[in-house]
Image 1 (tube, rainbow, N blue to C red):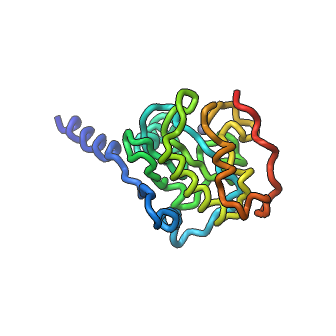
Image 2 (image 1 turned 180 degrees about the horizontal axis):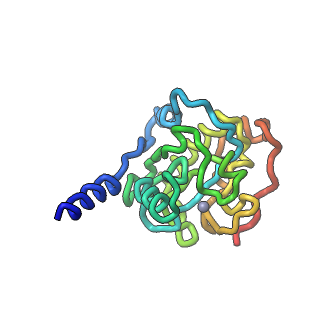
Image 3 (image 1 turned 30 degrees about the vertical axis):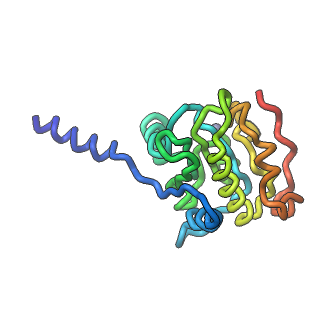
Length: 208
Ligand SMILES: [Zn+2]
């Protein structure tokens, strides 16, 4: 009886959903709200060189659910992505959640390739983009977030890539229907010449 009670307490502690700082950007202040969400006070910036886009390949989800999977199944110590953008299932449509790795500027666990985990900011959009496309609100939040990050870290839009574009990654993530070309074209104009650090990378390989 006592043992069962103790196990219940332990289970409750470990399965308690963790809350992540989040924001559903909208209105004229959306840009500054997203910039504020990305702050990590007191922690020096990592040397970020890529933004790596993922899909969850699931119909529903959010940072809490993905973190449970990453911790209990993958045996990582926390959510592998830096940011998660919801689709209105477990979190709001277009809601941006910030993971603990971003706040402590740790390397990611999302690309399966060291270079892109060490230097790539991992953003996961909830959805299966082999089957459908991201929602308008997801894309609008992603544009705001990616714009903020590439300006801050001087990352040229060519280095906003899909997971499948990471050299050495064997995946179709973020899905055949994810509009990467349109996303890049809509990002901040000043950086489109590749004026940031690092040479532009070759165009994305076609989806498999
Ligand atoms: Zn991925």
